[in-house]
Image (tube, rainbow, N blue to C red; front, side, top):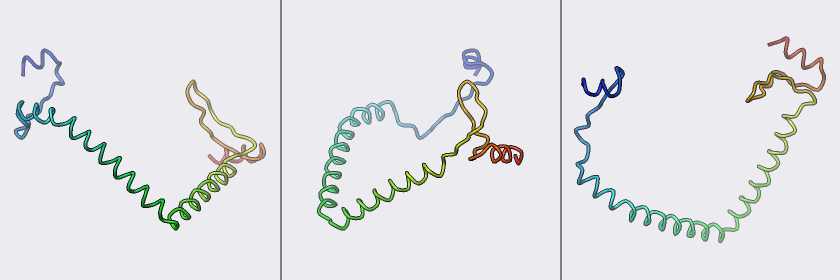
Length: 116
């Protein structure tokens, strides 16, 4: 501990894992890893291709997907409208602008600021 404290300072700490693999076990796992990763990528591509083929053959799925996309786009447009105000007031530092109040008139903005 004296040597560790000298090297790393007074806040040094350590842990011991009795279940940790041996050097040989780590080397073996390291050697097997590239092949396992390559097989994983190959299987994922096959799985995605199969899923895509099955879903493309399903007319109901295509209809639901198109309807969902249309509704999500509409929600995006509606949210955009609900979050825009004529006047926005806030504070700015070198990195961020923090909104403190928003409104369609100066009276609304001042009222919101005085409420806070």
